[in-house]
Structures are given as structure tokens and as C-alpha cells.
Amino acid sequence: MSETENLRESEPQQKKGGAGKVIRDFLLDVLICFAAVELLVNFVVRPVVVRGSSMYPTLEDGSYGFTNVMGRRLDDLERFDIVIIYLEEKDEYIVKRIVGLPGETISYKDGVLYVDGQAVAETFLDTAYVHSYEGTFMPDMEPVTLGEDEYFCLGDNRPHSSDSRIYGAFSSDRIIAKGIFIFYPFSQWGVRSW
Image (tube, rainbow, N blue to C red; front, side, top):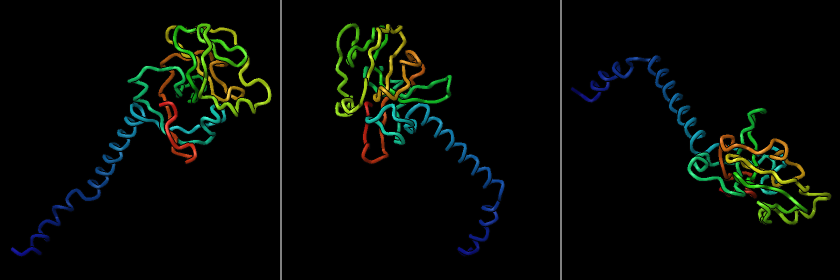
């Protein structure tokens, strides 16, 4: 039997199933891709778009990046981690920084963070930006004692941030990821508190 006859005999077998098989294969591929994306964004990394200026100048409005969902599940939350918080009441996500950990008493006096009565330096704040702000950058705040599963989170741009001062402390189950890798704008490229 010649090679041409072999090809002719195999053609009907390839066409078997026709359009139905193509559609089934396509739908199966879509389903697999959808499942892979769901697993990726719920258990590994999640895309993030920064909205607003509450984290400026650390993160700019409109920045695009990824946040570490797996790191949140594997590592403890630490002071000054940048975190993604889910606001159930607004059905939205916000980006903030942890300043207070469970069981601590947090306060501010003359722009200085106090944890359990001890001053703690916030070296991540852009000093030039803080001093350029007219008015009070961080107003005094009476002591707040956190529960055993509560975190006090603030934006780096204190005068323009809706954070724990408004929403109260956040429970750990509302903190869905920590750290952020910015890939755009390129001037911000890199990891922020991963």
C-alpha cells in the first residue's frame, strides 16, 4: 500500500466526531484555563490595580501589580507589611500598611507612632513628602487596644486615606494578601513589602 493510500484511509478517522468534537475540545480547554486562573488568583498571586492616593508616594494611583496570596497563607503578618484588605460592606479591596498587631495598644502623638507606649519609627514614610504637606500629616490619635485577631492598618498618605481610623481594626480573615509587586509604571517596578 502506498503512502498516499495510507493518508486517504486515515482521513475519515480524523474527521470522525467533526464539529462536535472540536467544540467539546474547545470547551474543555476553556474550562481548564478558567480553573487554572481561579486556582492561581485564589491561592498564589492576585492582580492588583491601585486606586486613589492613600498609599502615595509608596504606590501611585493607577499602578498595576500582583499581590502574594500564598505568602499571606504561609507567613505571619508583620508590622509594616503592605496588605490587601477586603471591605465586605463596600465589596471592594483596599491597599494599606499594618502598623498595629494583635493585642497591642496603638496611638499617635505629634506624628509619632507609639506601640504599647514605646515610640516606633516609620522609616518607610517619605520624609520629604511628609514635610511638604501643609497641615498635620498624622493627627494625634488616642490609644486603641487591639483584640487578639485584629490589625490596625493605615495608608502611607495619612491625610488622604480611609483606613482603620474610619473602619476600625481589621480581623485577619479580611486581609487576603500581603506585599505587592508593581510592574507598571516602570518607575515603580519592584517589590513593596513582600
